[in-house]
Length: 87
Image (cartoon, rainbow, N blue to C red; front, side, top):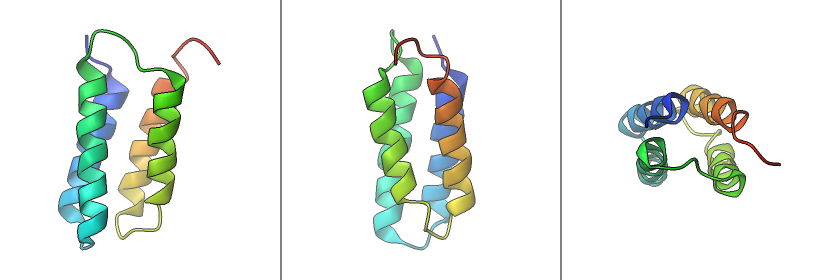
């Protein structure tokens, strides 16, 4: 089962990691892309806590040179999170 919004966020962050000139940001973006890719294809939905941590990490990266891509990925995560039951 694929979660399209998470897969889209992952692809966007992978592209951002390739585009940024900041090595630390690239490493963090790639790590988040890998996490979202894993969450997009696993058997069950991630919980709100996990998604909130990812959103916080994305918020921390909003002042990078790839801010537009980070914002797009964040919007995709939020769109998915709205479909998750619970809090």
